[in-house]
Picture 1 (cartoon, rainbow, N blue to C red):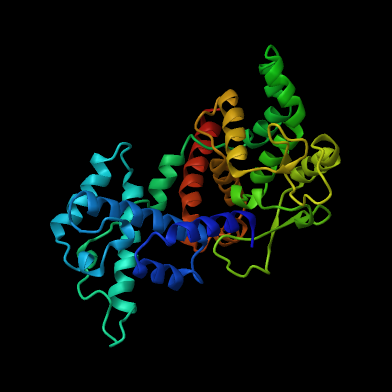
Picture 2: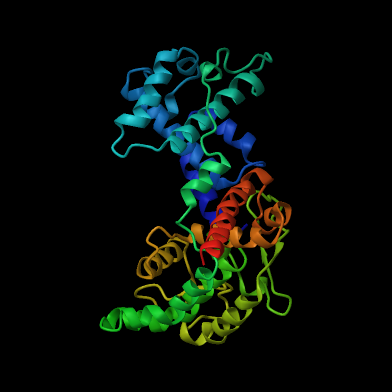
Length: 360
């Protein structure tokens, strides 16, 4: 089991025991089909909902685990409307429309399972009345809308190579007066440039980058083997191509990985760091990579750029030279509907390029 999956599975196991028995049954039912990280989000959503039911006096339960099927069966539409209002207006940090939609979808999945799939010893549904069946959950993010939000917040054309070069050299010039920052930068610049280069030349997700091992790399054939999201076969890794430029960046990083980060032979991770107060290189965390990209992006003049937007940047660039099916395959999307975002983005990119040529 890959690293992040194992961590999320452990957290899921710890949390689910504090849920009602019927939620535990639902999670067991979903485990073969959904990743532990998705199910962990489900359980967090149920924690929030059950806590709200208790706070509103809609259940006599003292703990979330004591919430009953009868409590769910006897909910009025008014209560569901109240919960949606709570999510959008009454929480400390108001949820976005997408987050509210996801949280309501989590509840819908549970209620659907209890009313349509699960049954008691007499073959009757566990939940006799499903209030969530009356709730319409609109699809929030259409590809065109997502594309509009991404416009101006990703790297385009020459910016992809410029950003990698900036990490490799330019950032050092910008912080030359800060000796402490400069020391850390000199230590990590090859590694950091290599990570940015890999994402911008392959479209890997940050979780896929974090989970990479040395053995997953095939420099000669410009291939990297990853566990792809949604693929539950733990024995199968998907080969993903990276572009020529990245081969040099990977080769440069590999020459210093062991010595510079004092990486022991037992550490199989491709990308390593020496954690504060420790003496040996260990696998980099997702959070460390995310923070690292944000740090460089701000100085580069693209404050909206994140590690996930590097993936979007690659995808937009790749789609300009390939069709939607090749782009879908390269990115590991489950359907072409997700990939349509880049069709909308490249439409704008092409129209702007034509305008530049006409006015130039």
